[in-house]
Image (cartoon, rainbow, N blue to C red; front, side):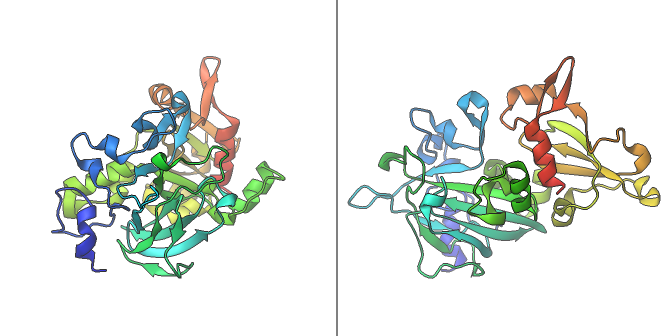
Length: 334
């Protein structure tokens, strides 16, 4: 399929004068129509459409939803969704799960992309079926078919026909040693997906990414969009060699003092669900604690507005990392 035939699904009214890295993964284009959100997102049972968006949108704000639940626009004679699912960007198939019983994502596929130097992943879940021959290692082009929308899942409740949707995620990979981290922190817990377990990815909100593409055109820069995060907290870590530094050097900023003295740790700015969007190398003299992790600062307003990451909590008149926060930093710096 030629790219220009699929470009209409990118952004309503944006045209295809300049190719962009990301394309909408289904034919549903209502996300950018005035008032179209109700036709684009599928909410959880008994909840409004907002519970199908990204962020702290479930369990009264305490549960993170790491993607979009995109509503079907086509149905077959049995009322099942008929929408074709397509690659959001040029990339490579990295993982295929064809056993719905192994995940609440049901049948899903993960693609790896290279966008503005960043290693980005996209996830397409609840598929009814894959396209014939889809396999790990295949290269795909933006807009290329991956399969058909469905409602597969291993959850007890299941997904009703009227709620059939594509669960779509964009994310960054945290660690190269996820399996070892899980064995340490959750001994005895099954890991059916190895390094491609969902816990090993940090979701990106697709909305500001697609909006930036629409507004900035050829000036769009994914790195700049992701650097524009509201910090939840800043934390110092006594670790100097971990996968995030190698995989995402674009988030590391220069510190002239650490250059001659040597790097003994990092100051990391995290957003509300843990995205490390700014890392400052520190010399030994700049580290404020001998502990592996030292919480420097918390944005109380951000924690109150978006508590679903559960990374920090009040402790007397101050703040501390939660067990969840420390486990996350263990995975990040593994």
